[in-house]
Length: 174
Image (cartoon, rainbow, N blue to C red; front, side, top):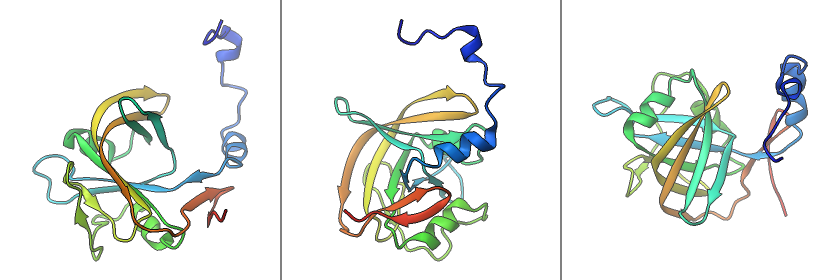
C-alpha cells in the first residue's frame, strides 16, 4: 500500500544527520530568495535564502518552499499572507549571502522594486520572479511547507541560474 510504513521503517534514529545532509547534497537545487512585506505594521521587509523551492501544481498554479519551524522569517511571511520568490542568477552570490545572513536589515543598499500582487520586494536583476499569496502552511518535520498560489510570474534575464550542489554555489550551463 502506498504511503504505509511499518513502525520500524518510520524510525529515524539510525540516520546520522550529517550523513543525511551529505548524501542529499548530491542533489543539485536552485537558489531563491523569498521576500515579503512581513508582519503588517513591521518597519522592514523580510528576505530569506531558500534552496527548497518547488513547483507543486499547474491547476491551480501552486508553488512551495520549506522553512525551518524556528526561523524568524516564517511568522512574518505567514502574517503578511503573501510573498515573492526571486530566482537568483549565478552571479548573485553576494546577494544570496546577505539574504542567508541574520543581518538586521537585509535590504540596506539593495535597490528593490515592488511585486504587483503581493507588494513584496523584488530583488534587482534576478532570473525570475513568482509572486504569490499564502495558500496554506503545513508541518513537515522540523520545517514548515509554505504553499503559495501564484498571482503572477515573469523572467527577464537569460543568465544561468544559481545552483547549490555538494555545499557549493555554482551555475548551470546547458
